[in-house]
Image 1 (cartoon, rainbow, N blue to C red):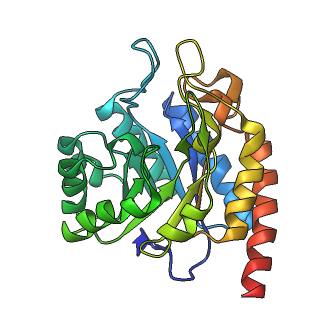
Image 2 (cartoon, rainbow, N blue to C red):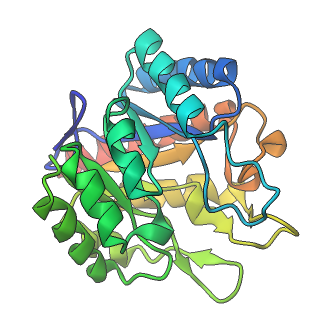
Length: 270
């Protein structure tokens, strides 16, 4: 499968899916896209830029959701027009799929919605590739049913993203056996930032532990994945959404250096 011109899976080069948790400003989105593009080029990664336009699953009613659907798509269109990067963003409702598909190169199904057949089929019907984030409540092998829905609905490709499994209250754990299992029926991406999230652990928001982003990413790359998903922010502690789980651009630079070396070593060994 391909996202834009970038091949993903089937022994293709490791793809970096990176960007913002959510668009805050147009200028900020453009600046982040340029910085992450430069880092990806420096470390030899094909890049798909990610940014959400409307986070419909915030913990608290007053939490920042984004600029809104229409304005967010307009910003993404400008990012694509100025920088030429392939784009991915999430879709929360079936009615959003077609309009989103006219701007981006891949549609993303949020983890909480990975079993919603109408949403999966609407995204598949656009003909774009689809990224299904594995629900925090889902067994890895059960994601094969979501994959089958999307493939039957006309998508040009599908991959699955691991982002942790519910572990008691307000915590997630990554069972790396699941990456191996899911890679048996679809290309697999590892979301290194949402996997360190502590859902609902803040007073009105989720918390997280960004110190674990790099170790988990290294483990996933060493095990074998097709894409690595990372959210970064110029000032994570000031981010309006999921700041504790995000890393800054200097940390992203260091992480990409590490996983590039690991990926090369693994491919030489293979």
